Image 1 (cartoon, rainbow, N blue to C red):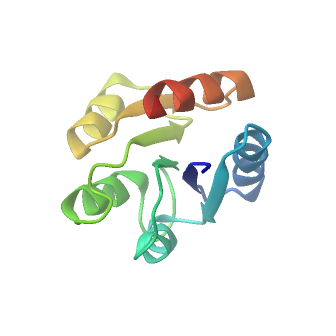
Image 2: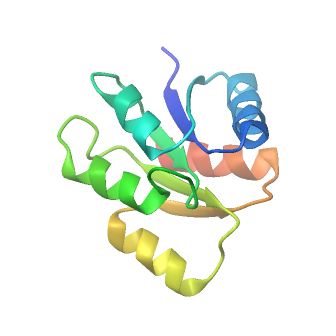
Length: 121
């Protein structure tokens, strides 16, 4: 059974790039346009990892992480921030919210897959 990964980003081109990279490696992908959309798609769904942008309308990545970590069904799912932000304070804020890891955009497909495979074991 292949693992399912949710990608959350307000940029359609980033979602497509992530989705293509993951599907090409054999993963199932669920796409969401922001934190609100992600939470609604996570409700009752099984995902093995979440890749989320930080800066999005409606609900940003940090609030999304806090909500997932505060919930029940997906609270232990690894969450990787995939963002243009690289400042130490932003990374610390992400870690405090419950982020498992951090990838800075633009990313290379092989870099993304290496992190996903490492985290998912």
